Image (tube, rainbow, N blue to C red):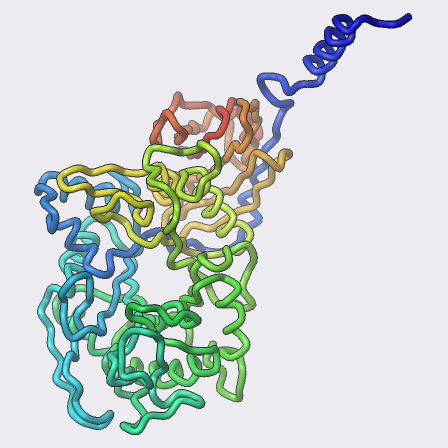
Length: 475
């Protein structure tokens, strides 16, 4: 029998309807096992370097009430995201004009062995009072990181445009070897903070050493970084200051991996003096574990190119969207085993995506990126451990963490266009225990949903809306 065109179209439409995705997927099973534990979590945060701290304190007219709002959003565990890490920029400029960060030794002493003329203004481009305010709200880690040594310590006699630290392997200067002077400089920065009542807990001396930026920066390979680490470690020990050493903030995860061989080499491996290995996500994302037994931190990453998208959790998978960053964080913690994740800037007066919170003159606009961070930082506290978590669907991804308090926070990211039914079983959770879901999507910002009671074996069932992130927190 020959079918008419109309009959053929009808049969085709019937077939497509029968094979199309339903309004919900088939059942997705999530299994969480707290007995299998992985890396310790140190926290989440951002930087306010290059005078961005002053944006918070009203440089562009932000009123006092909104200054407090921003500080609470960033650092208060109850009122905001509860960030516990702040990354300071150690300045290398002899001026604080524009966005430059002033040096504590702005004047060239003339030689590496000459007495330095250190200067402390108690302000540090707004970063010192910011650190005070952050600590008062629960900050636990202050990471001071130099983008460059002062220009007179470098092969190009300039804090900008790359150049190497005088004295590292294969890099010599007519003025001599400045490695010890640079170590003294960094330790003095920590001492100034300590004497003023604020503890610097971690100290770094490089930022993106593969990139000769037009702004402050300094080039280095792994071997050259190792040369300096050995000297810095001895200098810190002699100072009796309690501060941990980080290295090397590679511009991408692959770039940091390429430095590991140099840090591990030699009869006196520099890795032995390091506490944290640090890298960025720009050139390559943190999708695998670095070749080290040390803790690793993702210390900078941002959308520097995308359109202004503060209100979008998901539209088309753009680089500034909240879901994009929820996925970045989850992958870094789960697949790369990082112990910390930091965005570039926490808050700034800008209509770009380079900050988590946009400050536009007097206005405060937390982005969906910020709320994606808060889904982790608010419930995954320092000292928690990542625990085993699996999903039966590759499109509904999961991560889970057990806090020192015993509370378990489990993040589900539904990357599908449809709502999904899920069952979550958390081994060891007793029947009757309250589980609170918190959702972030295009419609909600970390909104608490109706409590769920766990059943036998820690099992509960619920739904996750399309393109949403839900964190389940046990009581």
